[in-house]
Amino acid sequence: MQILTLSSRRVDAFPPEAFTSELLARESQRVRELYASGLIRQIWKRGDVGGAAILWEVPDEGEVRAALATLPINQAGMMEILFVVPLAPYAGFCPA
Image: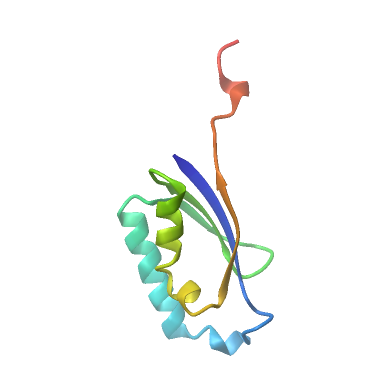
């Protein structure tokens, strides 16, 4: 099953200097691990605000939520998960 998540940094509660290079390096390392494991299929940095859009390949939504809980920025309370959206195939591409 594929799930799309959209997150944003909590810049309302944390100043830019709180997102240290060490924290961002740990976040990047954890994302690489999740990608290598096959849980993350694609990831994009948001162009409008700090955060990410992630396409997950998982057995169920619980696995996504568990993986999100391992991200260092999320563990620090500095990330807001805005959407967790299960995706279904688009019927318009099916044979008529």
